[in-house]
Image 1: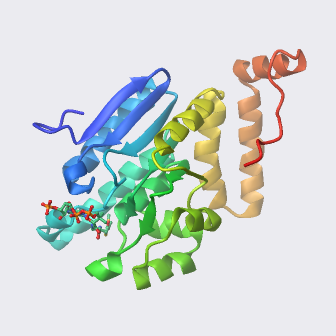
Image 2 (image 1 turned 135 degrees about the vertical axis):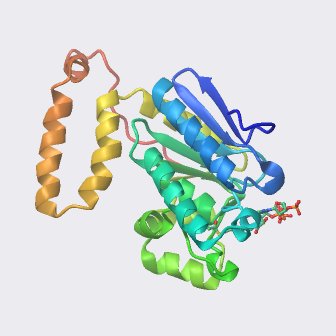
Length: 263
Ligand code: 1HE
């Protein structure tokens, strides 16, 4: 992305996949206002020209969270507006038009964890560690973490992380539900691409329903959720693409599901 003199966010198309890289490794990919705006541009572009996207961080750390140096300079209203801007941009990832897979290594901290939580699938390598040091810094989460991270791992665990400032290893985070895959060191990006390609091969309308209906249904009563589920179900079935995919299965033109490989 064009960010003046620096490329703070890299962008590349690889077939149907958009690859979006946090590209400020000297500052551990800390998220400044310019970084979050460049991320927004990349996310919008990916929604236009890709079927799925991978977000990753350059260097040994995924992301050190909010740019604390810039934050210190902000007046109170600037901090509020900044947080609301992150909300809108991360919401555009979580409830946009295509799936986002995130590849994590090293520090996944504060706003970096909040960004990861806005993606649909999280892959961590063994070097990843998760932290919410806001309490130590005298601030609070502001990038949607109190909603998204709390729902992923539970508000008790999130509160524990924030109160104690402890970091959590990827295997533990997988048990807690904060990541779905843990892979050997250096393999998170490749694994994320494999998963994103699989998601990209789905019917776009199904992906749209998965991304947009699931988080909304979670916020509804059971009765309303089941009602919306029926509407989404019939809407996706009514597309020509669904008809062709169903026919392909019945005519044995498509691969059968298999039991997972043992690990
Ligand atoms: C930064 C930031 C940052 C590094 N803002 N500049 N986030 C945090 O509290 C995490 C703070 N960062 C760290 O704990 C460590 O930097 C790391 C564990 C991520 C990496 O450690 P290390 O030893 O590899 O790097 P470093 O030497 O600490 O940092 C390298 C440079 O990046 C250094 O700058 P330099 O000019 O001295 O080279 C650091 O100052 C700079 N740097 N992290 C600004 N975060 C929407 S609300 C969200 C709220 C939050 O995200 S709170 C959590 C903030």
